[in-house]
Image 1 (cartoon, rainbow, N blue to C red):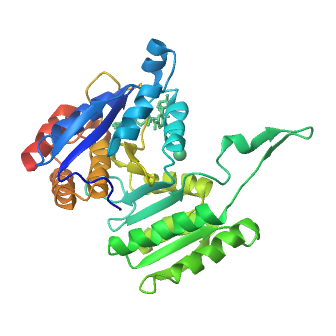
Image 2: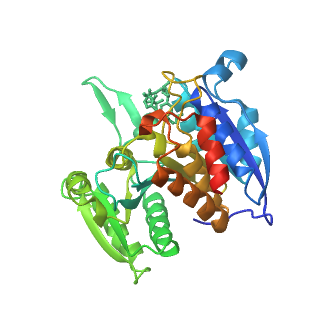
Image 3: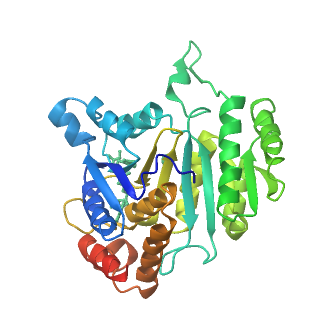
Length: 336
Ligand code: NAI
Ligand code: MG
């Protein structure tokens, strides 16, 4: 990932804990980050259901400004207002790339031990933009806009990601046999951009076939790049492949900012009990560290998480253990 606004090991981080277990996994993650040799300056912002109740808006302008002025943002989870918060933040910050790693960790319910790929999803256009939807006399129409600019940007991001991270192949996913014009264009751009990366293997699949290959040969993927809705669907399939929301991080990246969040929501069924798995949030922090160029600290934290999962002694309930959120954080700190 690219580095922006580096301030020699001192970073201003926007922290939005949000609702439910969002604040619990955030607290655990901040305690871990404070044990790395990096100077973080945290600015807390409010957003979500509780914020709506208190202030009348789920995403106050003040919070948007905190994110705008930060080097990166950590976001926990919102409840029912999630779309108003996270979709709006992505738009405000023009975060065009959604990164969803799919990686099998030990002692988890994954389909295979050797799954390790990244889904790079276009975040700004395509069949996922609600304002391109309208009611008509016949029913309703949703408009799927594919622009050369946005697709070149995301495809180039995917190839650059592959290059920077020692990946040897990028897979472009589309439905160009049916959507000949829009996905035809995506496929054309995929190979055009790919020419600038001669050392990286290129392949393209139809999205339906990809849905099957993810089950039958998940080990064969390294980087997948695709349009907005296909990426949304395939990334949840990816989460299913490696067993469980408590482990899946994500990143939203733009030229002027980046936001890191677990894929899970506020989990009202377990909120307030101190038993949420903080690992998805911690792995989101690992992604943030890499974005900031702090690869050594990222490796340290990633390895501590790997060791914790391999040992299998201090695990939360979703992974079959009985540890609390805080016990997991304390164990990670020991392993650092
Ligand atoms: P959810 O992800 O909150 O929970 C789904 C299931 O997974 C629950 O049984 C929960 O206990 C479990 N779970 C999730 N994260 C876990 C963790 N870290 N450790 C252990 N167990 C975990 O999704 P759900 O139930 O569909 O939505 C609950 C609320 O969250 C809703 O209000 C929804 O709008 C919001 N939401 C927010 C998101 C965001 O802020 N990005 C994303 C998804 C949902
Ligand atoms: Mg989704």
